[in-house]
Image (cartoon, rainbow, N blue to C red; front, side, top):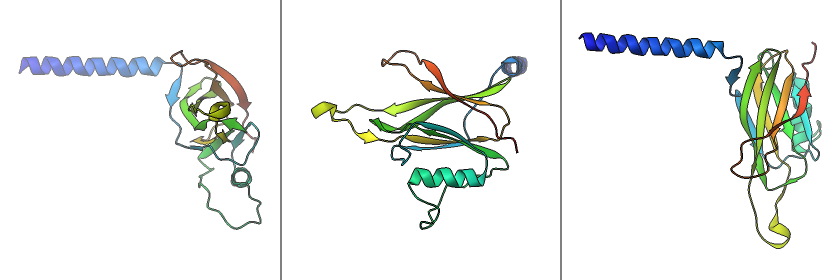
Length: 175
């Protein structure tokens, strides 16, 4: 009986120390609420957007689909902009990519850092046999007024550690 009680006390103390250590961390690391990614956007140039309203979302979504506002209705991913915002990442014309993986979302004292990495693959054939694609990602995050820094993994060699490079800093719209 005493052994069980001792084990329970030790486990609880360890858990409390882990919670306290986590609370002291400078970064609050989280995952996006959701991510939608692929390799067939109609946005043909590298673009990064911070979308904080339904009107801006509609414009970006239709551009992604290659449609005008007066075309037939196409369903869009619905977002509650009173609580959320969307980060749009468009690579433009590219090769051999399935889209983007979100590595992490970290909130530090004065900004939010979103790290992403290309989901790439190799091909073979004449001229490398590469597939022409236009990768994209829509990342839904909780609404914030902090700037958002986007960092791309520019690591060149398989098996090497990531090399993060800031590619955009997106300010919040003052509403």
